[in-house]
Length: 343
Image 1: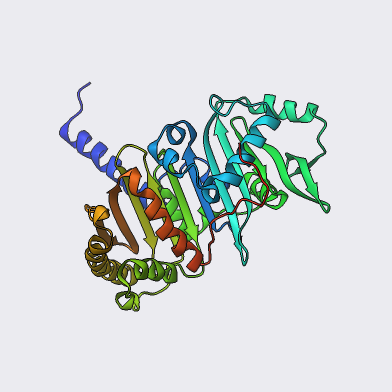
Image 2: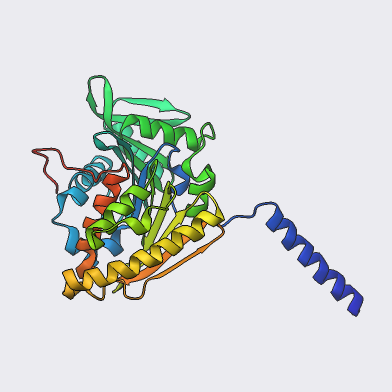
């Protein structure tokens, strides 16, 4: 039986209606892996593709800086040893997340995603004899307890996901997993930024603070010696970033403003400050005159977007600038405790 033109038109109209309904019902882009488990009070999260990062020039450049890798690397290998996993074969991605305090980053926690069998890892932990308690159906194994508080716990979240870190964060993950607590991805601005990251970038992260604008001012002051161009900026509380490890690193940074007008203003101010900063950088550091030479700054629907490329050889300078920015915005880089040894 042949379908007439009116039947085809009817089908086409039906497809359009379905599409419009899906859009109106809030059909959203997927979250990057692990983002759904970030607690709502986290102020910092960064996720890396382990094989890609370990094989990159970026890792080779920053590996000696213990403030970036020391404590996290030590805890990651401690987790792998406790669970019987091979970090180079069984683990694909690690998500580090933390809360900030007056003393800097606190309660650093790791969420691990890989090709391992979650049930076997759980059984391995159970057979180890570690003390265990259950929160919302998830077993939390206590490995290091100080003053009646577990500072290094282990848990299996699902068939290919596990976690390690402070008991408070693992409890929050268990409650999010059980539907008893909302995570960061459920918040309007942070959730929107996370969904814009995409599903599989090699590295991505999100920063949250009361006001990251002051951090940006400190960063530009180091480059230009003048922050007057940034005085009109309103508060920026949520910033996401992502990049892959191919040379040069293609970096995307997005900021959520309070309104569309604020985003347009932020973008305009950043464009002007970026031009001034580029000239100053060429004079102060001629060898880095081409840094972010292809940077693009734009704003749309309340989001400020910065995209550009950076050679891995220049990344240390960038991390120094952003390190100051994070501290000024209320987020400090984690420090390795005195005497701690990183594998």
